[in-house]
Length: 243
Image 1: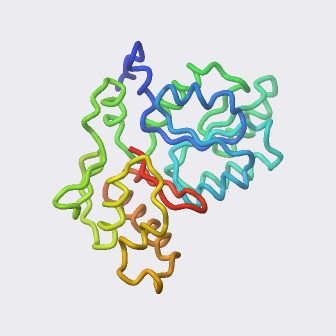
Image 2 (image 1 turned 180 degrees about the vertical axis):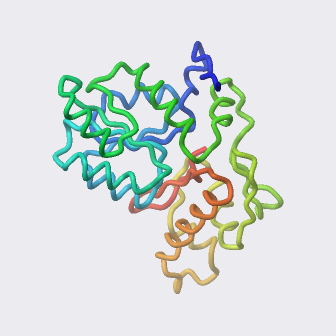
């Protein structure tokens, strides 16, 4: 049986790396989860969550049911259409019917409102190990402080190596796009710069083609490597690569 990594001392800071959590409500757990290494993006409504998921994928959705008005079963059933997405609900533990409703709808776990952060982090870690995407050993290596597994461009930028070790051959447009993002990781690259890297005729370039390129690239990366490319759209600005 696989064992969870020892989460003590400095290893605690990487226990959830590189988990991506999109969350509705319960803002008080954002910073604690970030201290565990998770990438947490908080939203104020289910509608905002759906919009974000249409642009940027994540590993786990965390919903505080006390902060939303939508029907719980309908929401969970909609999210469960993606088999690579974990769903965790924060519910009123004193209302077993509410817990059962969430689980019957397909939630992976139901925890009480204002959960103990250590318990929440442990549940998220356990869930992430069972989901498709980056293999569990990549997460274990990160928790043990082995940070060699990373996204890399190789062969002059024509190949993308994922943390899983799988390599994807890039098209000319994908190479130009990713080369610009890898040159400035964790920085937002504006659409004008991206367009300039993709064409020598920017005045006739349809900006919507960038969205199409990113969508196809994400799908190809996930299909070949079983990893999620850490590119995020920054609304009204451009794209950011988070390494």
